[in-house]
Image 1 (spheres, rainbow, N blue to C red):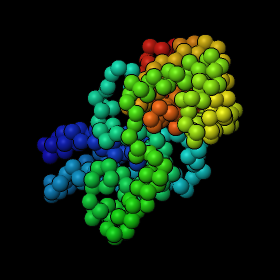
Image 2 (cartoon, rainbow, N blue to C red):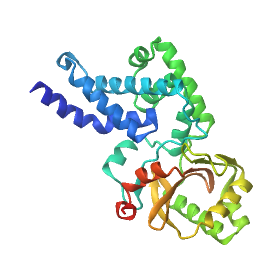
Image 3 (cartoon, helix red, strand yellow):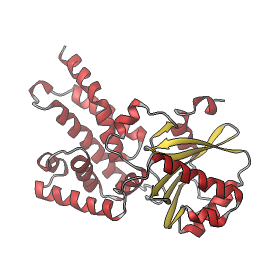
Image 4 (tube, rainbow, N blue to C red):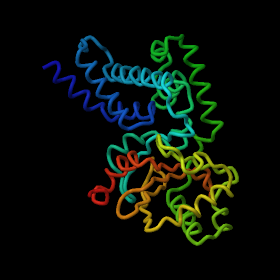
Length: 299
């Protein structure tokens, strides 16, 4: 009966735990692995003596994620300019309950990219304290530091997030969609001036091609370079744009012959596009888009 009680509480906390793991890891499959590992560890523990079970489960997941992040640093892992975090995708005009839980604290694409650049201990301190309001007294043992040192870790991470503009408020969603539509319309029409008009002077496009050799630059900065790539992409034969939400913001799935080819997420400030995140890794695109467009991805 005791284990049944723990299982029930764990399932109640699963959306929250997955939300913590996603922000820590930037990977949906790894987040699921971390949550499952947390369940295995929790089920073998004496939880009856734990005063705050929900906080205990959060620290278990956080510790697992921290170890996974540290392991990444010891491998030949792709740099942030090569691997983009998994976006959370939902169909246009709908909001999935799971996504609502994951996006409860407005985790945008820009924030996820900045989180990927943080050291593991900084990321844990920032995510747990600034996003989930975990006290530094509880964070300190996880990073094996004093509460004051844990506070400094979060402060350094916060400066990175603020400096990158990742915490800036997003434009109204309808305005976002209108700007994204204008971007593609100008690209398809070969309208350089119209395209540049919706691009911020400091716009950056990050492309993730996976492990294969990149056929194009992985990072392109400035309106001229981004416009050139947009014109090239607009010439893809048979390409169809499918509007979706990515982390609550306007994005598109580009499908060719009924199959998802790439994902594009946009970060918009005011009336300009400041970041474009393009995933062209075939396996990741199929996995991420497949849950949204199952009928389009089936053979």
